[in-house]
Amino acid sequence: MRAVLQRVLQASVEVNGQQISKIRQGLCVLIGLSIDDTPADLDFMVKKLLSVRVFDSNQHALLSPGTTMIRPPREQKEITQANEGVEAVDVEEPAKMWAKSVVDIEGEILCVSQFTLYGSVIKGSKPDFHLSMKSQASKQMYLDFLDRLKKAYQPDRIKDGEFGAMMLVNIANDGPVTLELDSRKFEYSPITHQSNPAVFKALKAANPNPKHGKSGKPGNPEKQGSSEKQGQEKQDRDQEKGNEDAKGERERTCGDV
Image (cartoon, rainbow, N blue to C red; front, side):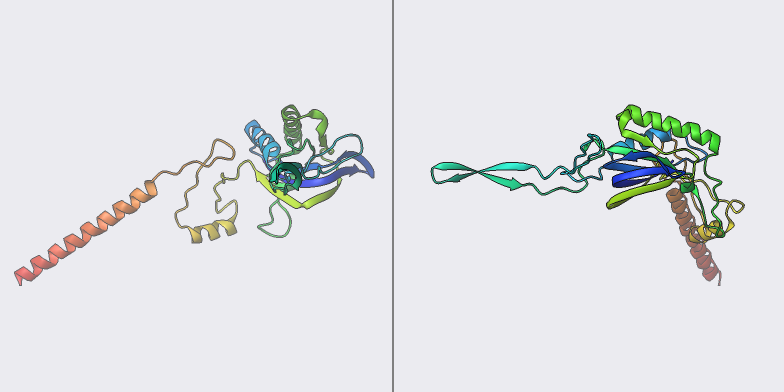
């Protein structure tokens, strides 16, 4: 499962010239589903979207109808001793970047289904979408994702586009700040000569003995064993033994002469 997260001051979706959804400050997220995605991928993405910190420490969304604001820097009282009295001085606290999540600022989230996130143009110039989940199955899983996201946050702050429709997405990207998220970041399917000849040839040239691991949990790579290291050690030992045998043979030959 893939997502393109964008920090926005506002975002909206139009279908056939009609605005069907709109948010103020928060996140606009494009969602792509792959043919092998499972509920575990949905849970991973929900947790990541709600916890990733892309907002500054002085940001806070005010969600009264039609308004959105950035909270000004907090003021702290610095107490200093001056002569016999105590003087209170207002000091602006500098904003810290990457300090808050969308939950922390109580922002909104606009989700837009986007099967083209799994498009490939490695071969030729026409996009290939064979890794994207088929329409009927992906619609049900996408709705399941939205339901999980609403349960984990606040339902009224989760907005949506129209699945399968031609949409016009308008955003005011704040920063700009854009992140790519992938629930299978550390999991790669083996590439064969049949599936992609060009990539297979390039990978084989770069690594004659590739090792393909599998990860049962999204976001976590599988630890590789030391079989490759052990094989190299065995090869070194065999070579050393061969050198000793050759040396002994030469000594015996010289003795016979």
